[in-house]
Every structure is written in structure tokens, then in C-alpha cells.
Image 1 (cartoon, helix red, strand yellow):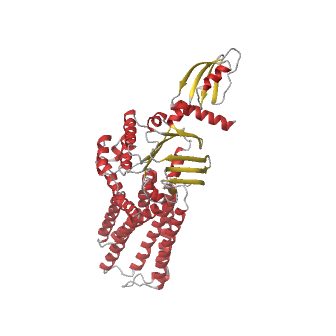
Image 2 (cartoon, rainbow over the protein chains, first blue to last red):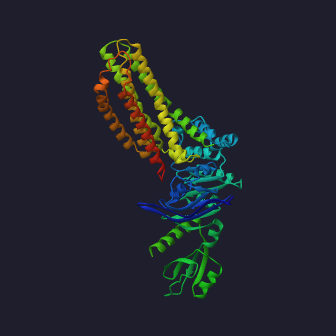
Image 3 (cartoon, rainbow over the protein chains, first blue to last red):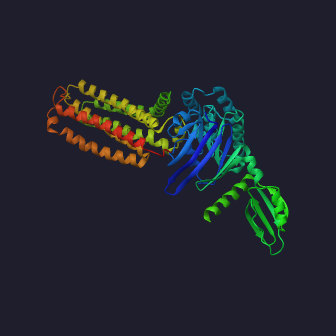
Length: 298
Length: 224
């Protein structure tokens, strides 16, 4: 037995115009991991590899203790997977789909499915083609959740949803996590969604993982310092500072390893610290991506 | 345990495509009804319609059952289920060929019964009818295999065009083969060595096409 729900190590996949490079990613059991990246960053490819739908060129993938893609059948009994580009059969009703999934999964929870129907405001007898985008996403999620998977893998589940539908889905995901044995990996380019429900966060950009850690640690370590330097003095990038933008005497420094003594260190160089601001996950994400791209470009 | 998932996938395909199969059977039934009218024109129309019904089903079924699943983005939904790529391919081939075989067998039996029931039509036609029907089965396997492996509507249509073009040529060479043609007017079916050899080759061709399909499918590294 392993205490990791998902483990990717040294995983790579090369396409003519895109390379997923040396991916290391671990999702502990009972955790929600948010995978954040811009469009085309490699989120879907990473998820497809861990689902066994795309074979990696190199590296090892284990999901719920099973090697992927070789043991994907055994692993998928306990994985609920939904992706933004996944479609149900338009000519069939939601009930038809529920019966189909129920015929496959012995653990299908009829009571929970009925509860989800009510909570999501769905009608089982309605054909899929008559559902709105938000209702289709909810229907897919119902089919995934009612089979009671140990691991939920969701690729951009909230893309294109209105705020109400998004909130309903995020609330359901949070409820799912009351069962501590359950894990979730979900990708999004919407940092608000990820910030709302994730325990762990991984940033991915241009096929590389640029950072991965506990959400609270992220929010603690990243700060924006507003600085005022004496005239003619260039504000230095002290250890822990990844970016300094200076305009005349005023500067903004972004710290990715903030510690309280950083402010003292600046004061020691003659630079006055006007204020220290916390950063939102979106600001952290953007700063992280820009820093990573500068590093690659340098 | 996983046999149940493959079975569920096959059943699902039957439920989704049964209307198409029933429509083709109905078309075959109408063709048989036309054949009951005793005139040359009706015989020509009915027998053409009879084969066309089979060929049309052979073209439409792979598109409806295989290609549309990718085109309409149902594949990710299915592949999220506990099946491997090969198990999915097996379920797909079994359901697609199975559905075609039901109609095909019904057409062949109905066709043979019709010939046997009509004293004015020589029963010697039956072996040739079986050879031509088996050709449509080969063509169907080619189109279904192309659809599954290529996942492309264009490739499937190209395979359909090639197969349909070859039916005419193959039919000509079979019907006008001197070793076969002489037996066409026989009052009883003649299962000559050449007829049996052609049927054996046809069965071997079907096995080969299915083998190649599964081999190519097993080599795929990216499924979605």
C-alpha cells in the first residue's frame, strides 16, 4: 500500500510542437491538488498520461499504487475522471447514462445519485442534448461522483460555467472531501477555484512543473514589498526576491521566500519598506510563470 | 471482472445503433417483397436493393458506431471506465461486426429461402450469392477496421469507396468464372472445389483483417 494517490516521476512526452518535460508530481491520499497552468501548459497531457490514455515516453506513473498505463484497468475502477472536452451521448437521457454506469460499477450509490440529481437541479429523464453547458458538466460530475471513486481526476471542470454553477460544483467537491480517504487532482487556469478548495498547488507552464507545494505555504511565502529608495540608488534583489520593478525612487519587490527579516535586510541597505502586501494566488501564479520564463529565456 | 465492462460496452452499442440495424432489415424486407413480383424488372430492382441495403449498413455502421464516438467526443467518457485500449477495441469490433452479422445473416437466409422457394430461379445461384455476401462482409471488416484504427471519417469513407468499387469487379470475375458460371443454372446448389476455395479465402481474409486491426490498435500510444 502507498500513501500517495498519484505519483509521477521523471515523466516526459514529446510531440512535434510540445514537450512535457521531466514531470515530478505527487498527490498524497486525502488531499486536493490543484494543477494550475495557462492554456497549452501541459495540464491535460499530464492528466491523460496519469489516466493511461496517453503513454509517456519515459518516467514512471503510479495511480492508487498501480503502474500506468500497464495497470490502467485496475486503477480506473477507483478513479472518477471528467474533462472539459468529455461529452455524453446527446440522444440519450441522463437516466440512460446512470443505468449504463451503474451496470459497470457495483459500488454505484443510488441514494447519493438521487441526492445529486436534486442538488444539481437535474432531471434524469431529460436528454443530454437538451441540457445547458452547466447542466452537462453537472451531469458528468454526477456520473463520476455516484460511483464513489477513491480518486477524482478533473480536467478543467469549471471552464465555461456561470458563477452559480461553479459554486455548486466546488461546494460538492469540498463535500466529497469529508471522506478523508478520497483524493482529488483538478486542473484549471482559474486560480480562484483552485484557491477555494485545494490543499496543495502545482504550477505548470510550457510543459514543466515550475512549483508545487502546500497552498498555505504558498500564500505565506509570497509577498509584495513596496519600497522607497534614496535617489540614484538601485533597489537590490536580496535573497528570496525574484523580481524588482523600480520606477524612480519607488520600487515593488516580489518575494517567493518571504521571511520577516527580509524587511530588516532592505532597511539595512538604506531602502525604506513602505508596506508588505499579501498576494492572491493569481498574482503568485503570474509572478511564478514570468519568473520561470525569464529563467528559461536567460 | 472486466468481462462485464466489455459486455456493458457491447450492449451499449447495440442500444445506440439498433434503429440503424432495424432500418436496414426493413429495407431488406421491402427488397424481398419487391422480389415476389414475378417480372424481370422487379427481380432486377429487388436484388439490387437487397445488396444495396447490406452495403449501406456496412458503410453507415462503422461511421455511426466507431467514428462518431470520437467525433462527438464520447471517447473520453468511455475511456474513463475500467477498460484498456485493446478491450475497448475488442468491444467495438464485436459490437460493430455483431450488429452487421445479424443483418447479414438475416439477408443471406432470406435470400437463400427466396431462391429455394421460387421454382423459376435456379438454385445453382445460391453458392454465388453466398460468395458475394461474404464479399460484403470482408468489405465491412475493412471499413470497420479502418474506422477503428484511423479514427478518421475521411479514411473510413475512402475505405468504403475502395471496397464498393471492388465489389463490382470481384462480382464480375466470380460470376463469369467458367468454373462457376456453368453451375449457375443448375437446379441444385453446386459446392464445387472453386466455390469452397473462394469461401475459405474469404474467411481467411476476414481473420487477417481482424488480426491486423487488433495489431495496429495494440501499437497505439496515444488514445485520446
